[in-house]
Every structure is written in C-alpha cells, then in structure tokens.
Image (cartoon, rainbow, N blue to C red; front, side):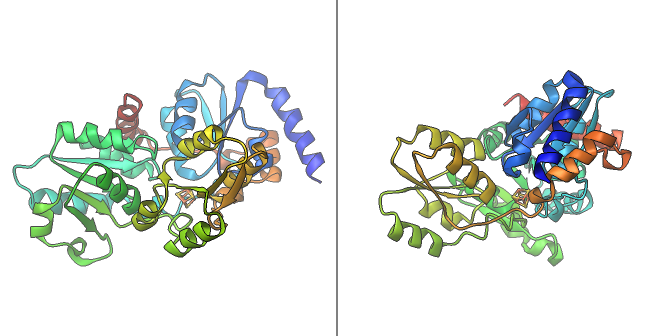
Length: 340
Ligand code: SF4
C-alpha cells in the first residue's frame, strides 16, 4: 500500500517538476519528510515559501504554517495542504477580537507607555494582522530573543501571544522581572490595572499540549536513567522544565545540538516524538532518547494517502486562502521578522 502511494507521489512530483515545491515540517511523519523539497522548522519554511518561484506550494504542516506561506508567497502562486483540517490548538487559543480587547485594556492601564505586540508564528493570520497593524512583529522559537530586543528598542511593554511558555521563558532570559498573565477567558483578563502598570511583559494564556506534557518527573527519571546525558527541551515547555533541563531551544537548535554531540553520547530530547525518532534514525551512533513520547496529532494528520491525492487532483478545497486585508497587515509583521 505504502509503496503504491509512494510511486503515485513520485510520479506526480516528476510531472510537475520545478513548478511544484513541497515544504515539510520537522514534526511530519518520516515518509512525508522524504518527499519534501525543503524540511525545517516554521521559520526556515516561511523563508523557503517566500523565496520559492514554484507555481504551486504544498505545505505539509499545520494550518497557520500554510497561512504564513500564502501570505509570503507571490500573488500568482497557489498554496495547498494535504489536510486543510490540520490545525494547531495553541494558535486557536487567540483570535483577533480577543487580542483587540486585551490591547484596549492594556494600553488604557498604561498611559504614556508604548506597548509593542509580538506574536509567535504559531498564531492565526488574524492575530498576525492585529500585531502588524500595531507596529509589532512575528517571532519563532529560534528568534524570540531577537524579537524581544527589537520590541524593547521601540517600546517599554511587550504583549506576547499566544504562547505563555515561550513568552515567559524568553522574558526570563531577557531578565524581565515583571511578567503579567493575560487570560482571555477571565473577566478583565484576570489581571489588575496595578499588575498591568507594573508589567514589563504581558503574556497570553495559551500553550502547546504537546510540550506542556513534559514535567519535572520526566527530567528526574531521565537523570536517573541517563546520568551523563544532555537534556534539551523546546521553549514551549513549562518554565520549570526549561529551567531543569541542560539546554533549551528551537527545533533547529535541537537538530544542531544533536549534530554537534560526539558519537556515543546520550541526548534526551523534550519535543515532538516524530522529530526525536527521525533524529535517532539519522544519528544511529548517538543515543537519542525521548524525554517522554509526545505526539502532535495535528501534524500526524498528513499522510501519504492525502499527499498523493492532493498532488493528483489539486482539489480547490485544499487550497489555503487569506483575506487580502488580513494578509496585508499580517505580511508586515512577518516581514519584520525576516529582517531580524
Ligand atoms: S506541536 Fe504544539 S504548537 Fe506545534 S503544531 Fe502541534 S499543537 Fe501546535
């Protein structure tokens, strides 16, 4: 079955040639990654989408990634996803309207201060547009620190959304003492005017269930089982887990760390299991161990069958579209990130 699907995908790819490019996120299944022309984290793939001249871009990832590719691609390019329902629960934890409400409250509590919004790339196009229209920037986990520096050069209070963990972990690295939590489901954001006035960073209450699954007990167990190992986690993990690990960083950082680790050494990795498994297969001379097996079910939705079907039909229902007014403002925020 797999062999037949692979043959169909290979045939469709060769038929389209350079007119088609396939982008594959690191968390995709191994057999999907094998067909990708570009593999990477969301930052690299956003750059690849912007640089591509292909007529059709197929994004194997989750919806916000397809949206970013659509926003950055040229108008005559078309962006498709094998499964258009593959979303990201964290991205869906903030929408443009809620962000507007938060903005009004935070700016009213801070007269005379300049608030700069930053959104993690794992956000909807609406939220990116909100950020772009207010002079803010998009970041990924690879450049969140640089985005903080960029924002602090332009203002004195950061609103970071939608990931509480990446926002908090980055604020800690940047030495911020006063971090307020904005809960979009609580009256008045669950925060007082006094807390907002004192805050250096306001973080949105959103999270990735794949990365917040890791706990201190996992770190403790890994230390007992692999006392000489380096433990590295993604900054979407809980701050206590990031603090207890030996290193933390983006997907690209984790891949580099594995590459630079001498053969024979052990690395325990706290991120999505498909990436950990692929690293273990790619570097059999290192002992690569998952901190705990945690899968992103949305990344997993893309499979060979859906990819083959898309490449053969380019069904319009699988095309990613973004309203042009939203795309214009979102593009501003994404392009600011590209200059970091
Ligand atoms: S791993 Fe987490 S942040 Fe990434 S797509 Fe899955 S749910 Fe979203």
